[in-house]
Length: 399
Image (cartoon, rainbow, N blue to C red):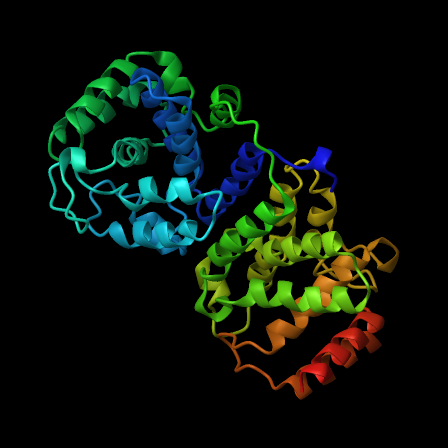
């Protein structure tokens, strides 16, 4: 990926935020629609481009601290009382990123009620204005029913927001929302089929491009989102990525190539957000239908990563990490001639780490037993023997 191919921060975050919608159909375009509402409020309140830009990214990432489908669905309930933990978790995650640190504070307080009481101890104008905007936008959005036409819902939704004026929500923001909601164009922009195009067109000006280190930083954040979906995989993506890097180094890959490999390793399971929790944590054998669902996760990963300019190679490595050299893997059933070395490295790293981790249906295996299984995988033309030899050399160097 050359500097000319480096994605804009706006494109990168918009693409990765699509992954949240994979958790459940009810969530769908929640983050995009919240962002649309936030931007309309920002324009009505005549906020600066800097504040509007912070709101844009905070809206797309505001629920990043809610990991499981259960957590996400609970906070989609308008009256759900215990919404603060995911705010704290999201704040801590984003604080680690130099690039996303300005977004952390608005997310930290985005469920603080205007008149309190709040765990933060803040009330009214002590609560950051951007947090207040995200809160009212978020609660507004969860009232939308996608199984009904949106325009006829408008009066009921705005009346519900008005009922909480001065208690949950800043009266100034409620008044602004009332003004905004008089426009039918605003409501059309909230329709799932249009909201992404609307955001692309009206997003604040931000011409910053990401460095490779920025991308690595954000990949670690999204890897945490994926891995924390199940307690059996809480370090999986990070360990796969770091194992892949060791293999790549031993093969003489350049520093830039290794960073691309690191990103692919961190994000290789992004599509698993679409896999229901009950399948990931099932303690018994999967049914054929459940296994078919599992087998789609590399393709979902590919769809998200391939939408980022310059990420075609990273996306390719990710989609092929469950393919087999004999052509019997998934999801595309490609054979050895079409599986690039990056994908082969991630495939071996992923298989090794998975075998040495606990799973709901078995305990983790010792390294020696895992290597025996991987040797059999080579004999059966599942994985690349040369890559496995490098992995074994890397493991031996640790002992």
